[in-house]
Amino acid sequence: MKNKYSIFSLIKNAFSQHENWKQAWGNPEPKKEYEAVIVGGGGHGLATAYYLAKKHNMKNIAVLEKGWIGGGNTGRNTTIIRSNYLWDASAGLYDHALKIWENLSQELNYNIMFSQRGVMNLAHNLQDIRDLKRRTHANRLNGIDAVWLDTKQVKEFCPIINTSPNIRYPVLGGTLQRRAGTARHDAVAWGYARGADAMGVDIIQNCEVKGIKRNGDQVEGLETTKGFIKTKKIGVVAAGHSSVIANMAGLKLPLESKPLQALVSEPVKPIIDTVVMSNAVHAYVSQSDKGELVIGAGTDAYISYTQRGSHDVVEGTLKAILELYPIFSRMKMLRQWGGIVDICPDASPIISKTSIKGLYFNCGWGTGGFKATPGSGDLFAHTIANDEPHKLNAAFNLNRFVSGDLVDEHGAAAVAH
Amino acid sequence: MFIINCPYCGERDQSEFSCGGEAHIVRPKQPTELSDDEWAEYLFMRKNIKGVQFERWNHAHGCRKWFNMVRDTSNDKIHAVYKMGEKPPLI
Image 1: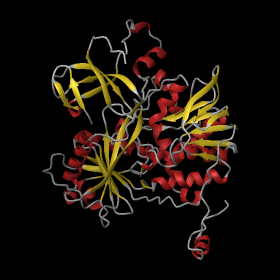
Image 2: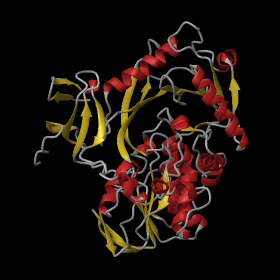
Image 3: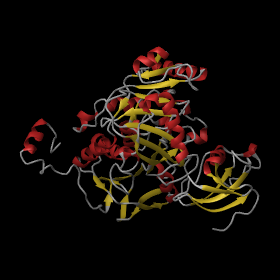
Image 4: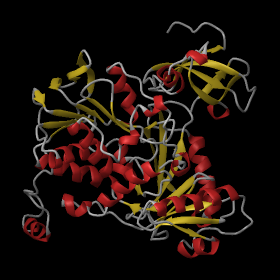
C-alpha cells in the first residue's frame, strides 16, 4: 500500500507539523461504466468493495454514498462486536466476522481500536437462565467461546453492577464471551475506504441513487444525482433505506425500517472495562476510550425514517440502567441520536441474490450489523463476484421467507445494539 | 414521538399506542389454495415506504380499538386518521 502508516511515517510527518499527510481516499467523479457498483458507503458497503478488489480482482468498481463516508449507521451504532449467536448458520456468519476483526488493524494498516474487552449478557429470571445456558452450550459446540457466570462471578467481573436480590429484576447470572468487545466504528469505515481506494475503487460521496434501469430481468445501470452509471452488477447495502432502493427495482423486501437510538454521557474516568447487556430489562452499556458511557436504547415501535427516535424509549432504557448501576444516577447525558435500521422478521440478515439478474442485496441487519462488518463485506463480495453465495451466507438468502427456513435469532439479537 | 388523534378518544401521546404495520393487506380468502410465494408475500413482504404510508394502529393503553392512519414516515407527520372499515382518504 502506498502511503503506509508506520512509526517512520509519523516521525517524517512530524517534521512538517503533520500538514502534509495525503488524503486517505480520493474524491473522484463517477465514470460512465463500472464492472460493479456498490450502493451505500457504510462499513458493510466499503468492506464489500474492498474484498471485491482484493480477493476477486474486480478493480473497476465504485461505491456510491448519498451522504458522507461513515455518516450513516456506521457512525451511529454502539460499536459492539460479538459472535455468541444461537443457530449454526449465525454462529458461522458472526464468528467469521470476529476472526477477521482480530487481524483487521494489521490488514488495513489502520488502527480500528479493536478491543476484546468481553461482552456479558445478564439473566434476570428463570427463562433467561435457561435460554442463556442453552446458548453457551450451542456456542461451544460451534467453537465459539462462552462461559456461564453465577451472580457472584458477574459481580467480580463487573463490580459496579447492583447484584442485590431486592431489585425489581435481580441479576441471577450471565454469560461471557471474552473474545467479544468493541472497535472504533468510523475508523472501520475510514480504514476500508482507504484500503479500497488504494486498489483503485472509486468512492463517490454525495451521490444518491434515484432509479435502477433494467432490461427485462437484467440490471443495466443506475440513475443517480451525478448522472447515469452503467453497470451489470449492483450490490445494495443501504441499511434502513434498502426497501427504498428495492422499490426502485420493483422488488419488495421483508423489512421494516425503524429508528434505533443510542446516547452517550459526559466523559468520566474508567469505570466499566467491559460491555454488559441485558435483554430482559433492555439496557446495555460500555465505556468509550474517551470516557463516555455508551448506552444503547431500543427501536421505536413504528416505521420511520426520521433518524430521531422517541423520548419514552430513552427514558425506559435509562430506568433500567439506573437500577442496574445506581452509581450512574448523577451522570449527565451529552448526546442522543437515532439511526434507521432495517428489521427482518427473523432478526437475521439477508445477503442474497434476487430475482433480478445482477442485483444483490445485503440488508436486514436490523439492530446489530456493526459486529458483522468485515464478514458481511467478505461474503457479499463473494456472492457478487461468483453470482452465488458462499456457504457461510447460503442460509441468509431471500428465498427463506418463501421456503420457511428462517434463522430465528430473536433470542441472541434481542437487545438492540 | 408525536400526538395521535384517536378516532375514539381524541388526542393522546404516541406512547399510548402500538403500531400494527402496513394497512389494507387483505387476508387470503382461501388459504388452502395459496402457494408458498403467495404466503411469503402475505406474511413477510412489505412496502416499507419512505413517504406517505397507510398503516394500522391500536390504542393499546387507552380504548384498545384498532384504526387506520395515513402518516409520512419521512417526517412523522400524520395526514389522516380513520376507522377500520372506512374508505381510505385520497392523499
